[in-house]
Image (cartoon, rainbow over all chains, first blue to last red; front, side, top):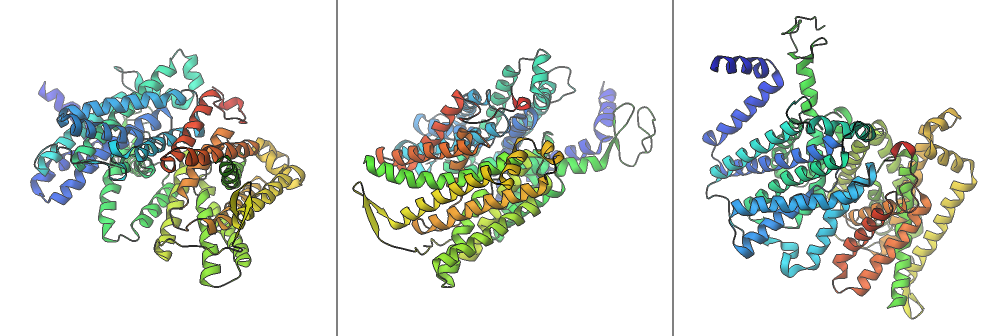
Length: 345
Length: 290
């Protein structure tokens, strides 16, 4: 039994450099707080974990189903405000407010879905852009309930120590990303959602003609995307101990797309890579506050012009090659496929 | 009250119309969403400030220089950043957003984020229907009308206009008919940037000039062109008047209207799209139909 697991491990993870790298990355991340206990760096990693969930949820909704959502911050903000208000006004603890906040984001996702089912392409992008701005206007108009510009502050912490915070966010990130990865796995025989999402993106009419109820699956994509974005938003509110208008900001909606496209769209691991490169980099650039945003914008432009498929996908394509006969991934230095021995060059 | 809404609504709608037409020209002809578009409006306003207030040129001369320079910046932006990725709808949106942020940051570095006031050509006001209307507002309205007429004449009466509309209808067939598509795209880009710059220089004296002034109009003109129908010039004109008047009415009629004006204008857009998914005057392309 153990020997078979070890063999699977060797064949499915060690032999494929991309997966090996992912494993090493998560292991390093898991032991990181044991070595470095600087609370500022741990705080950055906590936020990177949270934003990784957020970016992956955008990738699931927009990268896979092709419903390009330019207002993903709506889910983040709805969940952040819901959990913050529940915690502050009703005194619910974080383990209750976070799931409720995420469910509120699901409801928001289904509301956004109403126009989204009828619109496509650029229309959809622009309409989804409008929703967080509408909510933002309402928040600014009713300041006594929402705190207006200042937001809702003074909500409960998740835990007392930074290290515990980190491990909680790390675990949630790992589980969420795994769930979303499984949901979007096109080769999976257990769940069909992965291949159906791909089909909806490539050709919705053909998907319908094949007997797929595309409306149901689009609703599902909005609900799942909203749920995980909501988890990220609620966690963010409890870590920051504030839910403010910046949670609904246009810039946040764009950042999530930039993280995802930077890492590699439609790939699940791409957004994680994108967040873990760009977010710490942006924090590091706070030493140059005046040109920080300029550098950020320049990096985005350069990446989009020269690596339009994303950094993670670019590197993976350099490291791996697909066997032409059996479609298995191989390390770049192999001349013959590791399973069927076909010539790879 | 009603007169106030009418007069202010006309001026605001005029500005939106100018911007929305440029935006929808780019979308209609090149099928791309250029989010850097309103940053040319911001650059135009800064140009006017620099040449008139800093260098002491006559405001009208400063306006002309500013419009020309901004148009050149628009062309360079298109050539350097957009041209290579123009097939990919999401990439274009992201790259133009990044470019707009770059311009904003450059302006922030040069002018340090101060609130600046651009000089007016004429001061004073006129009383129409019991509402005080400053000459600058009249000038805005006049310029808007002249430019709109000009754009209409260009698009419907000249060979160039016919070529632009042909590319908008079907760029491949237009190419086969001997129209140089990439040149038409370049010209459209120039016209659109010039429209944004004109809007910038005429509005600048009535607003404060600051690096973030491009975001609010960007959201509003996106609402306008979507509700008017992406790519339809007539639609964006009508949309501009709807959104402009809704915004002005909300500011005049509701207590905390200044915060709600954007939200309500966007709600109007969503409602119209729920009823007519392709916008008021939008064209449904066979291959884009669902």
